Image 1: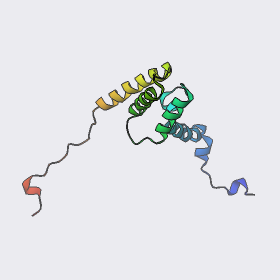
Image 2: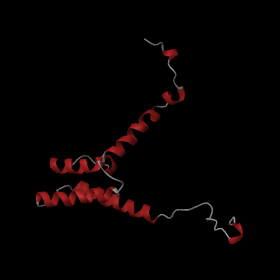
Image 3: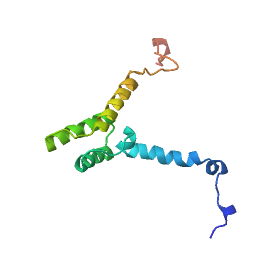
Image 4: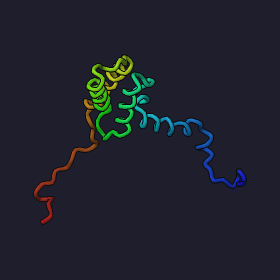
Length: 122
């Protein structure tokens, strides 16, 4: 058994409980569609499985598109939309947030320098 004084730790990291919890929370948000939406799992088990499997294999597309595709696929399979008002409310908020993020201009600190013919090496 190792004595506590022999373990190499950074006291600052261990003394702040928020630093220990933060990575877990961020990882959970990245790994769960429900955490991203801020709601608990809802809908039929088959729909939840479809949505969660799509989330785990997402390929960089916007989250709202992935969720919308799962809803559309479930409608084809089941013949009706899932009855998940909380999901649709959260999806509307997510879409609004994604639209706002798209409209936020990217500000560069310096304009791109365009070389003049004199600056181009021969």
